[in-house]
Length: 239
Ligand SMILES: Nc1nc2c(ncn2[C@@H]2O[C@H](COP(=O)(O)OP(=O)(O)OP(=O)(O)O)[C@@H](O)[C@H]2O)c(=O)[nH]1
Ligand SMILES: [Mg+2]
Image (cartoon, rainbow, N blue to C red):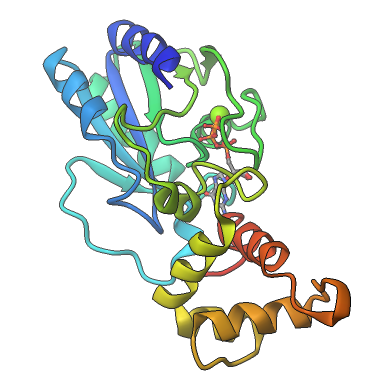
């Protein structure tokens, strides 16, 4: 991940305002204190944008200032965000750097602001590789960046939960899936319309329901775990 740091530093240097994009389902987990510190140290303004708000039924109260809830794919909250940007820039031309965890929707946010698909997006985490400049209008220019984790972080569970490492690549998918199922039992049971004694039982039932079976009709728990993580990470399961 270290190779991404020079992009981050460059963006912080070039931009007047930095947006940290957070995932509404995992606000705390997708914050990056190292980046926040660097932004403030550089004397730049930090604006929190809580994206994927369409994936939560109730918006949590967050003590982050200034912050705006948006859904980039459903274009919700973007007018309020543009207003906030104009307020912070006092109507002067401004360069905005967009930072955040992999896969939180940085590129999608830029497209929502620009009103067209100018930054390339993907459900694959780690998609944006270098810096990309996008002109939103004649006052606002936005810099897209590759997602970054905090330097020291190696938390496989968190990567799976937030989608920072995607379902196809995550290590130990069964452990990751079982922990998420345990922590969200009711929601998972409701989504798959099944019930289980515990998380292992639920994962077995998911395997059977979607015919993820090994020889002898035994449930293939790794395949079921990846299927579950796909649904989880791509926002099919609404919290
Ligand atoms: N439901 C929902 N999905 C979103 C939203 N914003 C982005 N996504 C999806 O999240 C995935 C990642 O979006 P990107 O915009 O590529 O995310 P990114 O932060 O640029 O990702 P990297 O470049 O890989 O770091 C895509 O599948 C998007 O369609 C949103 O507001 N709601
Ligand atoms: Mg991107």
